[in-house]
Length: 389
Image 1: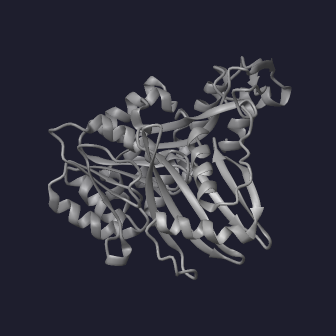
Image 2: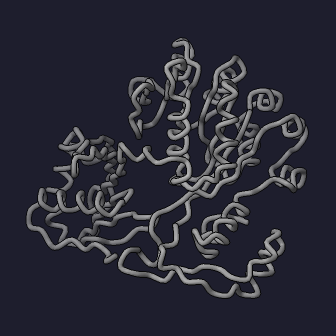
Image 3: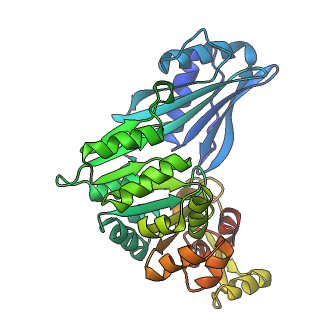
């Protein structure tokens, strides 16, 4: 696959159309329009990596900014404050949402576009990269019908996509499902979706209080950011609701510590929490991959994790169908089921390291990543880059 390079355009409208068409065709997730002293560049994020697809003189840039402000229903005269917006376009009969953010910088206003494909959730859990065992564990936690289920990982690790896929599993006529998001990323028929709006006082905590008066069975809260939201979510989980939410932590055990650091009492965490799923995204190897001998240094590390027969590994090769030997991304994850033993540990253990020592048998993300390396789905180098062992 040849890296896309857009030809020079004299017209801002034509350039924007070309760039949007390219990002959709190439399965890009984000676009960045970046002004500098005399030039500007456009970069596209594809499979997690940024690449430059266009550069030109800065004199053309203001027209681009103004066009995006019109598309995003923003104030075209405001140049000093950040603005957020969005718009929807159709490409090849496919509806695409674009989430738009504009912020002032030294040389002009920087534009960031997030690409949201409305039919992206037609993929099943296997297509996302989950094993049958992992997805069965996730469904079993959700099917309890109540309690707190936390999804963790850094920004861009696919947490929201996983939660939406799980909501599709739960989306039945007998269940009343409400989400509270910032912003709503995917629209799902049969689910009531709310978007926070801090300018009118609709925060996560205030919105969650209102949702509890709406008689829901399932609540999805986009993110727990503060103690107030955490307390309301935990109270809802304890009183019979299924609450799905996210935290920005490195792994499952760290999520428990984060809730405690927010000021939530351990006995409330132990009572409410049913499960934690932590995940990352790694790039998939293209079918052009090559098989090579595993280096001795890699063998020693792998043996320390219980992978003693890892004599061969797969590496990227590169062909006309991929980018540097990779094509698409997949989930690597760990799923912590909160049982009686874990609940006792929540009341006793003080930090994440002690949790790991107490549960040495727990199947961590690194194990899932290395399994996928052994099966040829991704490379050791990709797993090393993405996951802290």
